[in-house]
Length: 115
View 1 (cartoon, rainbow, N blue to C red):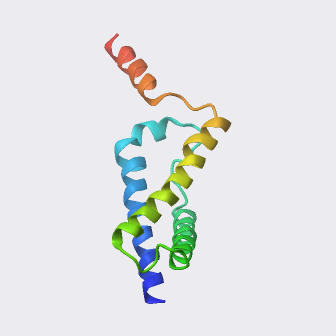
View 2 (spheres, one colour):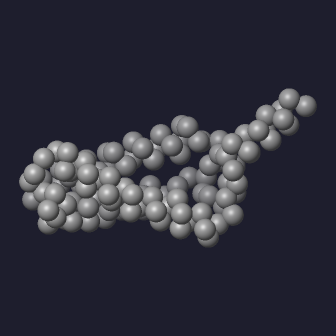
């Protein structure tokens, strides 16, 4: 049980660090410009999501052929699940929504500021 809890906590820390850096530092202006996003996200829902995802990943890992082998096998498992998630986020979501190009929006903003 201790390993499961540590796995979930590790997932939360890694996910939060990645998402917070992306949303609140690197692409802060981009996300602020999207009118259908909340100015203040509901952090409790985000943490609930990370707890659920971390629990599922920990359970699946513990019951997979990757468990108990090497750290490299754990990394392979993480990359496989990452590829699974990216297929939905990068392809499935992009297929449903009209998403502006971040580089193109930056160029338009630069041209407007220059003039």
